[in-house]
Length: 553
Image (tube, rainbow, N blue to C red; front, top):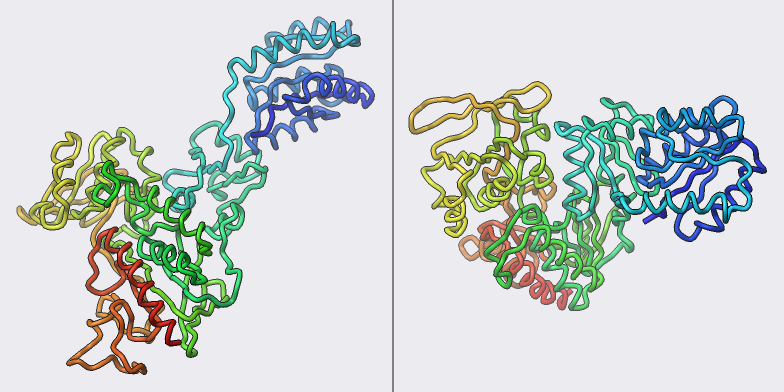
């Protein structure tokens, strides 16, 4: 954390140099001494300090300066750093002005020039003032700050990206006065140029893409080498497990993830049935541990990066990326998981990220404090989200199309929901319309048992209604079912015949696709068990078959 600042201002270069020298000699080990030769220069410095979220402990300002007096400077600086101590340097003839400034600029003290010797006339006064300031000082947040609008899809995207990549940040809603000040200092427009992302070094990004943020915070988006033994597309539990086992067994391994390591499981608020964690753990914790483990074994993780296509040039599989680059490998593992199915009702697309969210959207939980939250879906992911939001929201309503939760949810989770007083489960119900101008305002709920419709006020709607694989980029390469899930192993054999185009004198391995050397693991595989432990298991097992494949290449 940067040391707190003492700012001294004087238009006389010799006086400014002398006071800065004395301050640095006495306080330079604990405070950063910054000097400015005019009121405007001082205000410019203060704006930059504010954008970097640094603290100012004390102003030591000369009264007689052209264009802007010391008192005028302190009056303008006070809203920026209201807790900083304020001292005026003045000549004897200006003492009346200094006394008046005790009220107008909340002046704590004034010192007469000259202040020699400082041991008697300067340091004792400043020591008392700085001790008082330190007694109530609380270090500011030392990290990324995001200024935005709660109902802005772009703001939601930035928050979600940082949170899922385990990057601490501070959220400042534009309705707060501090946020408005920061936007002004950054010379941005409150409406057209949000979100504004401020970094500790003073740099800022306006309406940034995930790639821009990733490059700034040091995430790797480009591979170090053109070729790897194993390339994994997808950073969920299956992909991470394969990365750990592959790299630990000597395979040069790179993993590509288009959003954040952890996948859909990484956004889960609580996983309570994962072996070895009797108290449960969050999806974020699981992802963080797995990423650390993978990196320890030398796995390269590219994020955010997206695979766009594959071509076969035996014995190589070449993956083209969204940025136009390519990576070659001997073995390719597809572990892209699934995405939540879109709810096709009027108004849904327009309000996505502005009150309508797919998945848990953990970043929005605190903002729902004291509100009514609606969760659509009846599987484990919906139940975990409902439990999490119940800690913040006044009430959570689960809208379930079926007759109950028992067909698709684990019993332990059903029991928890039933014992949580501010969660209500409404069976036979589905959302058929959403309404709102700039953010979600109302939803229309249809009850299939009674045939009735009800319009309800709503600010937050979280949707968990089944999964779809994102495998269009593999069209024409590997065999898939009608929904896009990738066929592998025995599912490829029809009447004991190997898939069309299969060139090897053996059947496909258990997790091998219709193309030799392209494997699949996790939720994206046809017939997979949609559980975190299952994904981890498949990712681990896939590496054993990859070794067998590589031994023959």
